[in-house]
Image 1 (cartoon, helix red, strand yellow):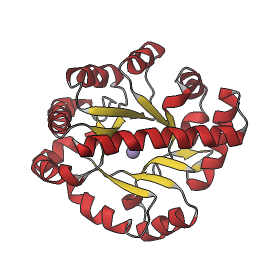
Image 2 (cartoon, helix red, strand yellow):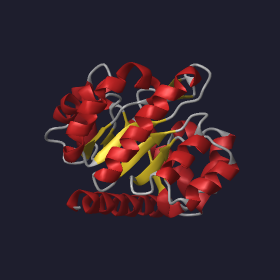
Image 3 (tube, rainbow, N blue to C red):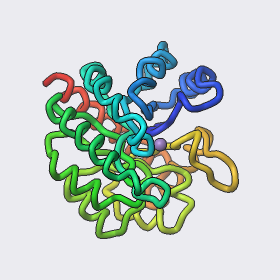
Length: 249
Ligand code: MN
């Protein structure tokens, strides 16, 4: 099982979540929302070989945390994965787009200079502008668009620049989400929960929902659930060897 976008540090009891992920052998990308949270979040995952911690600066915090870009730069050499980063043009945050762009572009530039990174990217209401920026920084690495909610045209553009996608239970419950997933190349898809934020059926998504997510993906792809699980694990292996190559540069 794979959770390629989870906020372990934002649960009430992060240690208990990490223990559960270890016990259930779930390969996890533990994303962070500020550079200051990186080292502490990495510590939570000590002794959990399947958890990787990503260095992030969330677009919804960009206007308050842009001073942490210096820390981001210092920590980047030890971070194999980057996220959560990106842009958010939803009504609540579009007034801060200038700060968000400043932070996002600074990070893409730092990733380019560092040899590229696998990046977990938020693009709510901002898919086109996120893609435009990724095109401006082609050496920044491999973008994984998390919970992508753009148009079919934007999806085609994302596919054409080589983007990957992480999709979760909430997206698989929506008709629009499923229509997007159908159009994604199966060899560039990973599962995620976005826990503890995402909700479905009136309750928070958690790791027990990943089984269902895999079955639904299997249905979409016309595979048996076990084949879908194998496909996802082989996708994870390719993305993790990409991350190794970046670090070796
Ligand atoms: Mn998130």
